Structure formats: structure tokens, C-alpha cells
Length: 331
Image 1 (cartoon, rainbow, N blue to C red):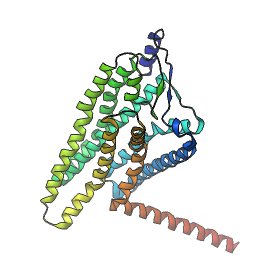
Image 2 (cartoon, helix red, strand yellow):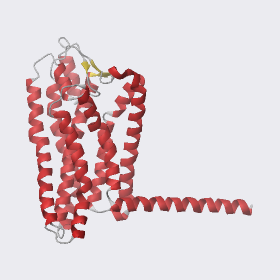
Image 3 (tube, rainbow, N blue to C red):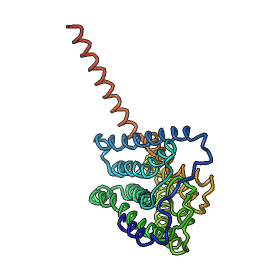
């Protein structure tokens, strides 16, 4: 895609004066930039560590090698990628004031942001499909789902990378002759389409088509699966059975609700105002931070595995300290 964008720049160099864009989202709160930088840095580091801990915990603890945790571990890696597309450049803007981004770099960021956004929506769909199958067909669940788990984990990335390509290219082929000021904290479709000197009708149309036929179906599928899951759980006679069934999908329900509610609030009627920037910040940066804590604190098996690892490390550390003390005493 970089080659296409570079060719586009060369082709339109006589009519396009914009070679870079300037991200202005936090210019009006200059006095709070350092505080915002510290907050973003803490959020980013916590998000990376939290999701990485979940991935490693699931990977190395044999008690968490069920299919549900296979998808959770891959989702944790996706969250790291999701937040890393935006935050490093944002941190650079806040600490060093480097709010300029090249034309090609801007559209690469746009493509990666759209790709990870679509991937996340489809990965949440795959995860609810997994929970739906486990609850409605528990006897056949393992035998049918095991051969498909890797393909189901790869499928969202294929959909996301293909679907995000079209609106990115159609937006990149617009004429940008100035101004080049983006009132947002990263290169997103709507702010870029609003800057175009040429008519963005086709670009907006393609964007809406992708949203309608790619993103919306995943959202509606999740709603449909959860309605059927709830109806199935209500038919379970024992209270313990109902609680156990619901506990296996409650974390995913909270994560899905956070993701789609903030996403809808950001993109259903974007205007580039400060409240949209705030909602976009929640959607792109804060939500990935919350997800590992939701999966940790609302899942008994993950908590038990975490406590077991922590206990083993604590015992091992105390044993090593005791051995060192004995060696010192003997010497």
C-alpha cells in the first residue's frame, strides 16, 4: 500500500500541496500536556503489561489450555496491536510537540487503525460464537471447535485487512491542497475526508458501505448470539448451572459492550469536537486497558492461575533467599 500512496503523491504533485498533516487535537490544553503524557504513558505501559501477562499466563498454565482461553490470549495480543497503532505517535506529540505526520505515514496509520478496529469487532464475534457453541452444544463443542480454532482466529485479520484497504485507498486518492490541520489525535477517516479539496462523496460512500456490510453484521451477530445464549441459560433448571453458564460469557459481554458502545458513540455522528476527541480517546486507549482487568477479575480460573503463579514465584524467591542465608552462615 505504501507504493500506491507514493505513486499517488508523484502523480498529483502539481495539484496537491499537502505533503504532511498536523495533528491538533490537544493544542487547546497546552498547559496539561505533560499531565496527559504521563497518563497516556501509564495507560499504555499498563495495557501492554496487562495483556502480555494474560497471554503468557494462558500460554504456560496448562489449566488454561481450553479453547475459550485460546481466543482470549489472541485477543490480548490484538489489544496490544490495537493501542500501539495510536499511542506511540500521541506520546511523541505530547512530550516533544512533534505533531506533524507525513502523507504516507498518515494513511498507513489510518489503514492500521481501521484494520485493527474491524479485526477487533470480528474477533469479538468469533469469541461469542465460541461461547454460544459451548453453551448450546456442550457435548460436541470440543470435537468440532478444536480443528477450527486457528482458522477462526485468523479469519478476523483477513476481513479487517481487506475491508480497511478500500476506504483508505479511496480517501488517499482525494486531492489535499490545504489546509492540513487535523483536529484529532490520529489520522482517521472523517477528519481526512473533511480536509479534501475534491469531492469526498465516493470515499464517504465506500466508508459507509464497509461500515454497513462489514462492521454492522458483526455487531448484529453478537446481539443475536447473546439473545440465544440468554434464552438457553434461562432454560437451565439448576441455579448453579445458570451461574456457571453465564460466568463463562459475562466478561466477553462487558468487553463487547464497552467496545461497541464507545465505537458507536465516536463514529455514529463524528463532528471533530472536543467531546468526540474525548470519546475517541476512551475508545482507542482506555478500553484496551480495561479488558485484561475485566477478564482477570471476572474469571475464577484466570484468577486462580494468576495466584498460583504468584505463589510459586514467592515460594521460589523465599527458598533462594533461605539458601543464600545458609551459604552465608556456613561461610
